[in-house]
Structures are given as structure tokens and as C-alpha cells.
Length: 386
Image 1 (cartoon, rainbow, N blue to C red):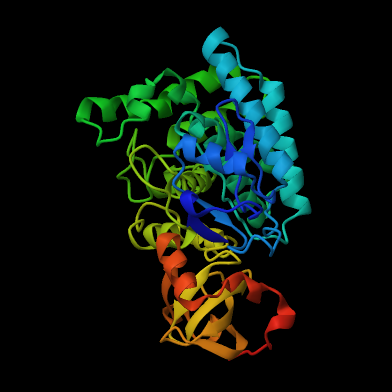
Image 2 (tube, rainbow, N blue to C red):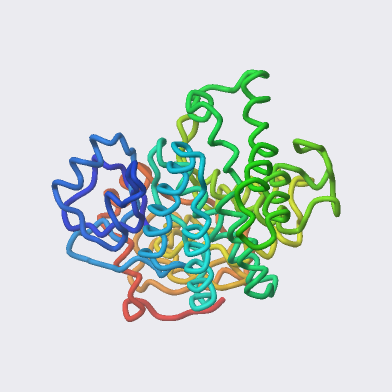
């Protein structure tokens, strides 16, 4: 996936991420070619950049398969949007609709577990809560599946992901979407969403499986392993394992999403933040398991390595920090006459020096006069393992 500024988009480029509107529907679904109307709309929405499968409109590559079907994700966001807005307006929660969303997500995760996680959608600020809840549910279901939980347990965990932020219904969007740092009073209000969510679940979710456990997930997903979280500063084994899972999913999706106060981080940057600065925050065993199954460098990512420049052609479970690349230029940016495939797992993560994206990628491809995505077809390079 090649992330490029919207102003550099061309008609017929194939997008590798979806963009959701205010009602939970999709402005644009990944895998579709861009039209002039789409590009104009993206500019008006103020979206800074979009990932495409190729910078060459004539080279139409399909985006990599995700862990859930795109129609599953779109439908889930629409349903969650309707349910949460209904709760805000009537005070009633459609638990049956949430159970249906959960069941469909779990079915996809079970049937498509051979795919790495590739969450790449774009959410506008006023749709963040709905899409975030769905992505947290998906990521939680994936991690629960990797932990070999049975379907009943997966159902509780996935519903917990959908409902983990339900307490934010009462918080002003002025605070939720504030661009600057929250002051002490605002942060205190923000922190209240955990216990408020648990309270609402106890009241409204008696028809769902294990409402007390769903409430615990809502109450505990901001607690930390070292006891420095909130609201109760509990630690270690005092935190339910499902809440530890949802905490990882919650932070990862927040980091890789654009918010009013920050740009979206790439999966690799989110990985580095969570692994290096999250010590004491997350269950380390669960965090390692999670990132072993997330495309840290998704197919199509352009990397500078100590071999030279390459494009990621494959990510493997358990080796997501060291993907297989097609090396197409040397360290001086000189195109190779015979590009080669290199498996970086034998060299380790230090083999990767930089991820090339955004305007840097545009300048890079312009200077070389090469669209790196042409090397994603295996018959254009010989296979080489080092």
C-alpha cells in the first residue's frame, strides 16, 4: 500500500483503504478505482492522504485481503452507528443488533484467520466512535481466536469490544474532539466513561451473554499492568484478561487512526510506540501475540533497508517485523537491472532503516521514474532468500 497525498491522486488509481461517512456508510470502499468525482470529494473532506495499490493508474492491483470482509466492516459500522445514535436519542440499546454484528465478525475471523490483520480505513472525526468500536471488536476477536477461546468466549470478547466506549455517549464532543491537550477537569470527565460504560451495560445488557463481564471490560480497559491506569489503579491479575485484550486493540486502533489532535500513525510506528513506551501498560505475552499477526509493514510498503530500497511483497505470521521484499534499487537509489526477492527474517528488524511514504514516496518515485508496485507480481523478480 502506497500512501500518497490526495492532491497527487489520479483517476483509476485503486484505493487500498475505505473512507466512512457520518452515517457509518462508505464514501469509498477499498479495491475501487478512483474517479475525478471521488478525488474532488476527498479534497473537500480535508483528507490529507490516501493509500493506493499503485501510483500508476494503468496498473490495477487488488489490495491485500483483510481478516474480515469489507462488507462485514461497512455493515457493522452502519449498525453500530444506528444503535449508538438510538441509545443517545431514546435511552434504549438494541442488543440484538449488536449480537448480530458480533456474530458476523466472529464468523469472518474464524473463516479468514489465514489473513494478517490489515486495518486501513479512514474515519472522519464525527464517525470515529462507531468505526473505532468496530475495529476494536475485530482486533479483540482476532486476539481471542489466537488465544484459542471458544465461540461463546469470543462472543463476549467481541461484544466487549463493541461496547467498551459506550460510556462516552454522555461526554461532550467538545471534549472528545478537542485538538489541544485536555485540562485536568476535562481529563477527569473523559476518564469517567469507563465506570459510566460499566453502569450502562449493567442496566441495558441483561439479554447479552455475561453482562457483568462486559461491564468489567468497559470498566477496566484503561487499567495498566503496572497499576498506573484508571479508574481504580488495579494491576496485573486483578485486570480481567478480556480487558487486557481490549486495551491492546483500543490503543492500536487509536494510534493508527487520524484524530483532531494527531495524524494517523503507520502500523510500524504504532508497533514501535506500543512495544517501547507501553512497558508496564500491556500484557507483554498478549502484545507479542497480537503483533505477530498484524501486518506491521503491509504488502506494498516501500522500505529503505541496508541492502537498498525494496517493496514489501509478503508478510508472514510470526515474522511481521521482517517481511519479504523485492529489492529494486541500491542504497544510492540506482535501479537494479535484476530486482531480487529477499526475506529479511534472517537479518532481523535492524535491516529496515526507514519506511518511505507520503510526499517522500512521491519524490522518491519521481526521482527514480519507477512505480515500485510493478514489482509486486512475482514473475518480475527472481526469488532469493538470504
